[in-house]
Image 1 (cartoon, rainbow, N blue to C red):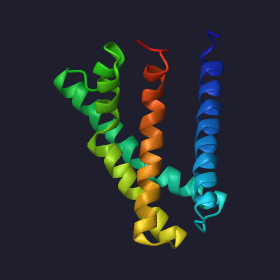
Image 2 (cartoon, helix red, strand yellow; image 1 turned 90 degrees about the horizontal axis):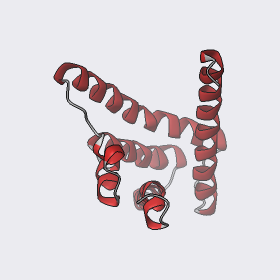
Image 3 (cartoon, one colour; image 1 turned 180 degrees about the vertical axis):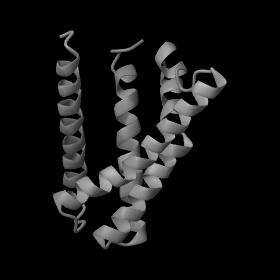
Image 4 (cartoon, rainbow, N blue to C red; image 1 turned 90 degrees about the vertical axis):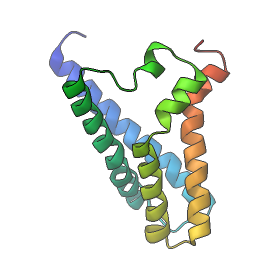
Length: 140
């Protein structure tokens, strides 16, 4: 597993599986709540909203290169529920959820109230998935 081409290939396949898997879970939630979005539209919405976190990662990387200070490593170096929550609630993740809510409203042709509720549910599920290992005792 030290072959760089194999590492790159497996990373790309892993990312594709993750993107389409998460989009499938979101699509199932949309179907349960009767949002008129196809799976293809759900994947597009997930990827477009996810651009905000990519932009955030670029800004953080540039900041770390310029300032020589680590950003967001506290959740990795000192894992706890609090640090994981803080790492998952930053301005770029909030931007992600705002874009997701706007997309649900505009593309799904739902009410603002329903789009807001679905966005909050997706945020709770996302943050819950990040905190779950601490709650079940996998990480200490």
